[in-house]
Amino acid sequence: MEDLLYSIGQKSGIYSFMHTSWGWPTVESLHFLGLSLLIGCIGLWDLRLLGVARGVPMDALHRLVPWGVGGYALNLCTGFLFLVSAPNQYLYNPAFQIKLWLMAIAGLNILVFYRFAFRPVRVAAAEAAAPPGARAAAAISLACWIGVIVCGRLITYFRPPYHWCFWC
Image (tube, rainbow, N blue to C red; front, side):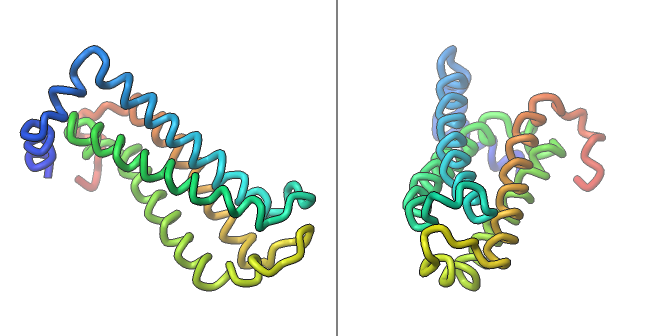
């Protein structure tokens, strides 16, 4: 996997771009912008479902969700640039691996939320409390995204000696 990712980075020119004086800082800034959109929109939505700011209609905050999804898409793209530019620094990094698991859990949580818990939220009165299933999904979402942020920061501090990854 490492060789494949490295090859993609080399053949596409991503590696060369990322290792210019402006490449990594530019992509890092875009990654932070995507994260801000994601947490700023999805985090607010989750907090409203958990009962914070009941004066704000759930429907009004839900209109921000596409912006959060856009931030997530931006982060997927910029994260891919990081990964193919230094695959050995990510693949064996426990913080990165946990980050991917948390993102997968958050994605599964979204699917479950929209399949089973969103309908009553969509028709709820403006100041109503979200149903228990929606609150549970919001708590899981918020916990996952906070974990993603923490793990993202920890990636830098866990530059692998490869023995740190016990399951690789």
